Length: 387
Ligand SMILES: *Cc1c(COP(=O)(O)O)cnc(C)c1O
Image (cartoon, rainbow, N blue to C red; front, side):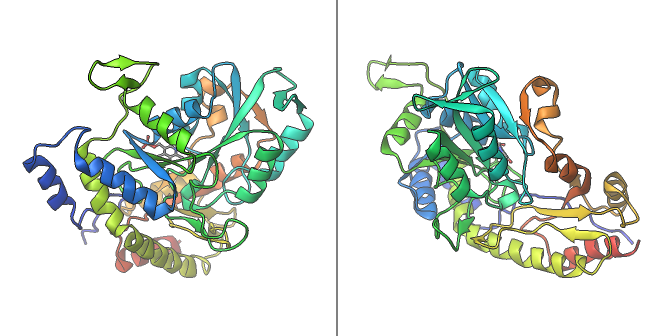
């Protein structure tokens, strides 16, 4: 039998993508000036209920700008998670600032308790500034990542941020569509709780523009500054006057054409992902040694990525599962290597990294595309059961 390949996460472009992109080509608006860019910004802001949105070339460039508009400079430090994709942290270094790595909790997102402990025990609050006792540097911001479409504990994190005057940048690159259904932030979307939020529309994300991203905020000043920096910091359109160092980070009309068509389908993608997640979960709970990571009970998650936890009583370990499933033509992948262990960051400060190391050893991501059919899910489950 010829089993078809089941990829981890691939785009789903069966809506109006071709129509809108064709329109962009036919009207010859292919660059950053076209009407789809503004429309995509407006519709994204509306969808997540933010005051405004500014398009960017990708999530990474969005995070780069977010740090700048939050006032982070090369003299500062930023608290970041160690368990996530490295693009969440590299922008700190682009600016010349230093990261301090924090552990995760069972949501895989930043541990809010440890964050609080670190600020209390390892720092001093002097003249309204949080100073790192070890380096004497000013810690200016936190980057919180909503891992796999889950939500970090924003209530606690915002409390810490308020107590110590920290800016909060939400890396919601994996979490567009996730929002609270309970608690003080009920109906607030991932990315709209801190000072600035960033989404990514890379090819493996829940919706894609090929490559692209969006910065959102409720702060009109920050939004204006973001737009300015992403469009070469031009202060006069006609005479080409520039008042600071800007970037060419704006999205093109072609990307935005894809984005608009994808946004129309986002709620449907989320429904499919949630349904497939429940199918996996029901079956995997019956298999000794396996479980599937849960999403926070107080949110409607976008269910972007599913985490399969492989315990010691399962016959195969993480790497064996990856190899075995690849012989079955099922693509799975370990979660990222910890960022604090990557070559550029080995000398960076860390604080009590424990859980993150455990999760890296035990978790793989299993196929989760919105194209995935029930049969595909059942096939993956069958492979996992047959051991
Ligand atoms: C995808 C991703 C990014 C970067 O987004 P790009 O659009 O690929 O630049 C940043 N952080 C996290 C957590 C991501 O998953």
